[in-house]
Length: 477
Image 1 (cartoon, rainbow, N blue to C red):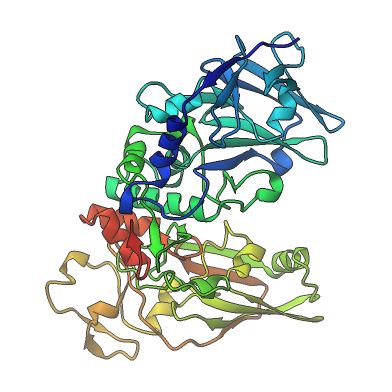
Image 2 (cartoon, one colour; image 1 turned 180 degrees about the vertical axis):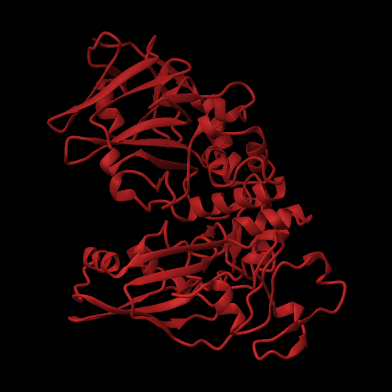
């Protein structure tokens, strides 16, 4: 049964206005040439469905997100069902008959249009964008969650399809901030997160292009939870930083971020490979102390190594062989009765478990406070507010009383900032049956640490000051 469409014809000026909203405004906008919309994978890989239902708060329509003037409205249709059988997508209405649409003088299947650049949107999405969100919200629903923009599909080889949300960059950012940094945090920290999220999105478009979308909705890209998870305060942070991005040498940057630096952020090449001038490690004097520990038996490590393709036989020893200039582990060596495996940088976490090895700021087989105490002066259980007001005398590791070097001390307890002081690295090795990891920080440590951004905002810094502290030689524009 064919649903006769209404066609909304918008003047070329309307299209230009949409472009101006996101890509222009003198020096306060992105100067890069990039799409104004972004495609987000919602359900994919093992979560890709073979059937689903899409609904809108108004009549559903088809739009191609390429700035064309035509909306093809499915008259009276607010709910559609999509299903895949033998690799063929079918889209039906409430009467279970396949939906078709007249487009460009031809009658086409809605399913075919959805696989060829069109998305299902609610009402006149372009009119909503031109109204700057003040008239109504154009929202579609999938899997009991609401999303701005539209929904499209990408067929997989296993009779499933990826569900994709296409929307404007700022609408996407609305759906990111509360998931990545909760609304209860200071507004300047939220604004810093908004600029970072927008910059990261626009410089990583096409990251999952082989699967039909640009970015996924998980921590692999950025946590995105859509309209259902928006908050007035986080949306305000997006609006108050509208079009602002992070630039290095007049080019937009991929603004990496993580939860907690452990006291020192990382040079990007010490975590991955490519050296980038704006991602240099800095001493993080605003980092709240974040401790973690975990232990593995040798047999558990053997299993993780085998799963990663390292067959070294029965494990005999585990050793930290090198640390980088920030104090994070740069290389670990695993020795078995059938050979050795040397694992570098962030791959250590990926093999042993990202959620368990929370950062590469760790030592093995000894308590963290013992490690620090044996290599320098430390403070424990002290009123930290007095540190900057008077001289503090402590015993060093040889038992001598010395004045505390407050600039390069490591605060073991308390809620104020912590600092790592440089030490001469000595390789450590475990030859027993259990390896204990004691660490600081959470995440890869490159770029903005969210906990530190929150602390800086609490102390009165604005979002530009926060971003300039953690990204080197950048411009915010």
